[in-house]
Structure formats: C-alpha cells, structure tokens
Length: 65
Image 1 (cartoon, rainbow, N blue to C red):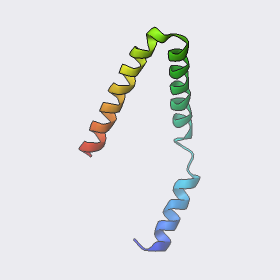
Image 2 (spheres, rainbow, N blue to C red):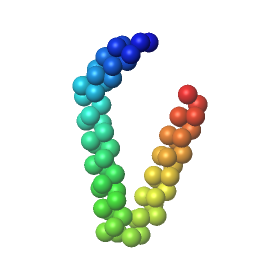
Image 3 (spheres, one colour):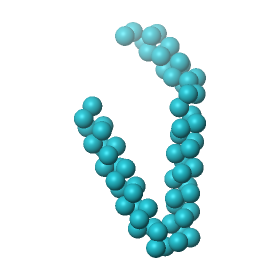
Image 4 (cartoon, one colour):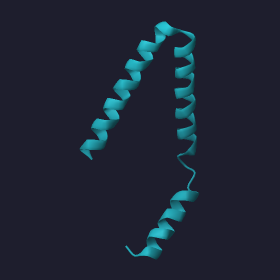
C-alpha cells in the first residue's frame, strides 16, 4: 500500500462516524459506574469486578485475533 492510499484510508476512517454513538454510550456507562461507586462504596467492589471481567475478555479476544 503506497503512501497516498494510506493517507486516503486514514482520511476515510477519520471522517467515519458510525461507531461514534457506541463510544459515547460506553463512556457514559463508565461515568455512571464510577459515579455510583463513589456514591455507594459497597458497590465499588462489584463494579471493579465487572470491569476486570470485561478487561479480561477484551484482552483474550485481542490475543486470539
């Protein structure tokens, strides 16, 4: 792939907004979880466990290809 094709691909990816909503919802869910953990300390350990499981799944998925 030459430099011009790579630049065109990067420009196309930069303009693509199809995944934007998903990222915004994920950020909002993370913010709500952090806020809930701050307000309710007993829930913080449960939230931490959930995030750790998600992290492990994502690491596993990335490693498998």
